[in-house]
Length: 197
Image (cartoon, rainbow, N blue to C red; front, side, top):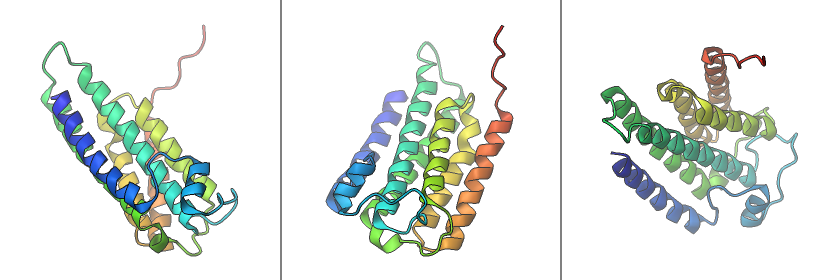
């Protein structure tokens, strides 16, 4: 099952990378690479978020990183059952999340391809905060105890990706607020770190 899921997901990811390469921006690019590929300088930290092509591409990079973390997390859970059968509930959650991962990659690739059309005017949120939020989401996906707990967070990322593609401030702000809420919910469900002896 793990190999089937890995092949299916990677095939979708490879198709998206071809589209991205044609658009002149690659998934996983750092700030310097983003600037080099778009011809724009990286935006200052305090600038209005999603107000330039480079900032849209940066969001796409962050969403791609979240998809990478999600894929690693799903496959880690599946590989834990190599000695026996994967329980049905785990299989169901894994399939659903792999579909969400593919959709997240597709939306990120769409942002790469059409970044110039998705610039958001007057978002009122700095790019640095937007990046910090998506980075926190990727970290939560990586560290989450139960894979099923990540579904709300992934839905929040998909909502943000879709909102960014509207080029409108209000849906993006709503999606950011929703994502922030999902991260807080996950934090409240995680056990506190063990106290040193």
